[in-house]
Length: 233
Image (spheres, one colour):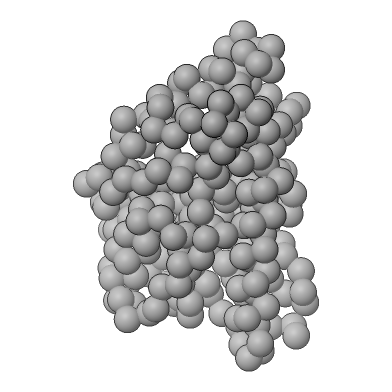
């Protein structure tokens, strides 16, 4: 079918653990007032977009973000489907530890003098984001942390599953997905997102993907223009 599906893939709003600068993968925490506010700003910036379907991960912070977004857009009646495939990467023993410890451990293992140098190379393409996630998986003393391939596979499978289901009726649609920073990067990195990624994905940023003629095209990564627009209304 040549119908067009446009996916708006949103990173959840700022949470308590984000504010404390702690690792938040499979562990969860609620949105802060700032996180609620940015979700409302996002809704205001997307007021011209009507969503035909909505999906989140099975973690509370994504559903909370989606509920605020849809309520503010007067689409509170739209069903939200939770999907494990969109869950954040698991960081094993690093869960709820300070971010600086995890990223410092990874940078030292990769022979960088600082985390900042590692970030710079990751976002400039000298190393891949997958390389960094694979190192974290290797360093995890619990053996629970997911590597890049595992997160990429489950998130892409979820996206393909939804694309096929939503395209069955042949209609053009706008589809909301609220997920997580690392899982969005893993999902889209090898689908064209790598070339568009130049920094981490901020809370409430939007990455857009088009499905048409059986293929995905990533058109943007980490777009904050919707939030910026909404903050001025």
